[in-house]
Length: 154
Image (tube, rainbow, N blue to C red; front, side, top):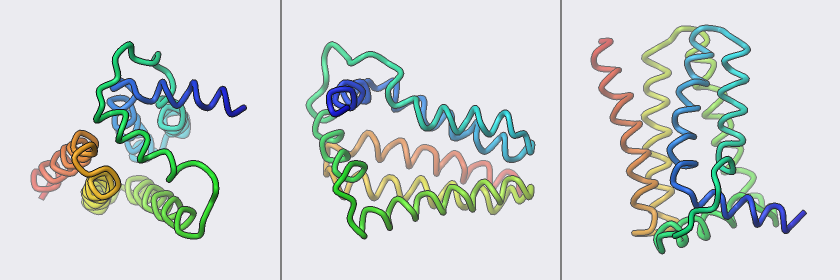
């Protein structure tokens, strides 16, 4: 089992897996907005599995390697109270965000997306320093996109 996880983890170093997860987040939130269980399931399955869809890249940039290796201890055993609490906080944010979109509270959903994107950015920089800049940029991008939508709705 450890060997399989190691092979899948190597696939996570492919930048395409990084690009796909936010897109599946959009699918997930759209499914909540449309109150469509099939679209919600598609988004959820995509989020849960897209990290290992793409082949291990032939060349892994050193900053990608550093970031992924810094991320790994946070999502693998041993499970500590702090790690479980952090994962529970992410899950809670996701559930509350989905509930906001399900209830058609666009502004609240967008605010939660902004908070989530910024939290991801801060976390990426905190755990990996400069190696987390690309991941942090993703969080800032999604937060900025949600902010633009928020102010267009207002």
